[in-house]
Image (cartoon, rainbow over all chains, first blue to last red; front, top):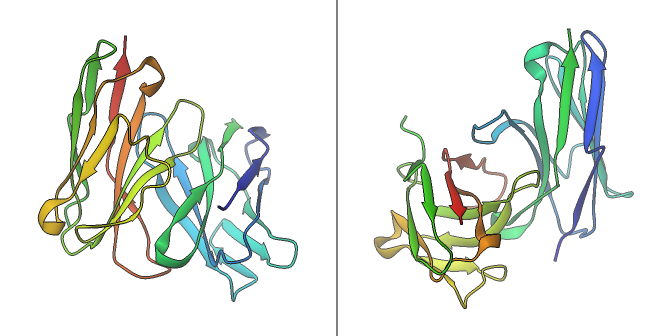
Length: 111
Length: 114
């Protein structure tokens, strides 16, 4: 099956700096890559996603890049704010919408 | 639009006891997922339904876990008997069928096994 690895496990940045979280996947059949934000005690919520036929997608301060050849994708958050502090999960999905999640990155944005 | 509903929100049981969780997906979502999220880890898929049929249950410990989705709407996940290592948050999610569709998660049930 698919194996998704996520790094780093924790990330601390100063408010206003950028944050980058990286994930790799093993199965070339994966074709959809969502990112979820999970605040403490709350449910995961989709923040951005990318399909395998696209190399980059941006939504305001958040962007995701995908390198299919290298089988890795990254989340980029610019101008970080304290409310960006949360755990972020990447995931890879295949046929029939089977999702495999990374282990999570705890982002701490210091004011 | 109402979200994914789950109950109970919290459950504390002794090891070897039984427990059941309930999930009501978003109306019209044919695909339903149960995930186990152990503290500090990402969600791990236990079982995936398409309507009332099982798409994937390869990571479901079938000696103690069972799930059903009769009538293709609500679903229940049962653990019998529970072990200490089953302590986790159990998340239900639903989506429209097909690829590229967003999963919507419920609030989860936090299970503590003592």
